[in-house]
View 1 (cartoon, rainbow, N blue to C red):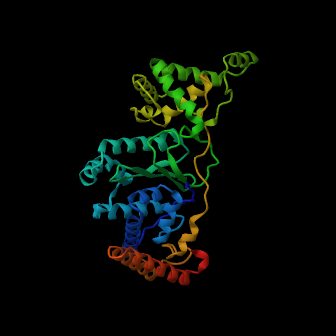
View 2 (cartoon, rainbow, N blue to C red):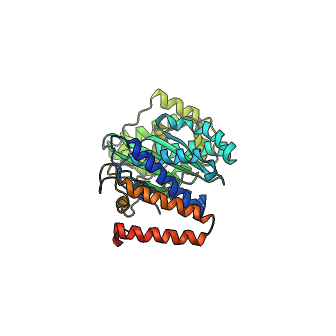
View 3 (tube, rainbow, N blue to C red):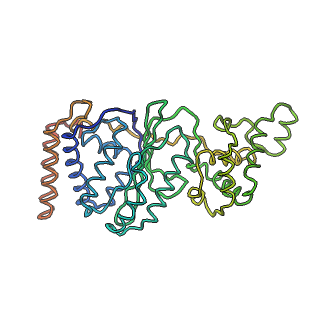
Length: 384
């Protein structure tokens, strides 16, 4: 189920003693899920932004912090590389660690037997999805690739909007430019968005590819034509001429208006014009495709060919996962201070449950029922 949660940018860090407990509790939860339902279930749960946030809350991280993504992915990366027998690995991370994906993919091949080329391709495409084909005001600063031994891949990445002081987390489980997200977690945007990743932009993406294949050497000329048609609307004759050419958008969205053909953009368009594309995914992997290039292609498709790109924001709207913050509290004291005794209690119960399952699965279920009963008494029936 796709989800949304507000993620304001928080400062500070998790104290080392607390992080150690969070790692133990997170490790025990992941091991229990794998023992009960398999690695596929873990990947499916992490692809859901609400479950991801709930997991963050249950291990004691602030319920609404942008640091949720960093801490959860950091913990998962540590426990998966410490024990490859879990059956999945987390690659990449925050800042410069994003660039480690190709190198770590080679190591993942030796551990899990997965295809490093497939991983690197998925990583590159999904990074382009949320930095170029979805332009919503958030700059990516975190990119993690979660790889399972059966070849399933999930990307969780996060962008920052320095103006609003909020972060937005993107979950991608499909190697596609059309509807690749399993969910986007963040504050719904009031600003204009250029979104070539949704179903209603399918024809626009197809037009981008067709324009490149048919007008490759003339992309800059087509962009100049589109820009001139935006500016040339002063007289009734100009308007009627545009109507006769079936121009759909006489007043383009604001994100087109700062468009200038810089030397860098011109070189990128010339380079792109030499590439032969079969589908939108080829475009997503083509050299030099960044936000300015996609904006130029969207402008050409819209103004010259009458095929607009969607402006729909990609954030989804499920229930608020705040309730899970009551499990053991949070680092910043919301809804109450992190409770290490409860965290250790839960960790020990889960470890016991997994260990006992090796002897008797029925005994494990009884153990978990006892755990639930004790948590009900501790937290109250309304919270479970």
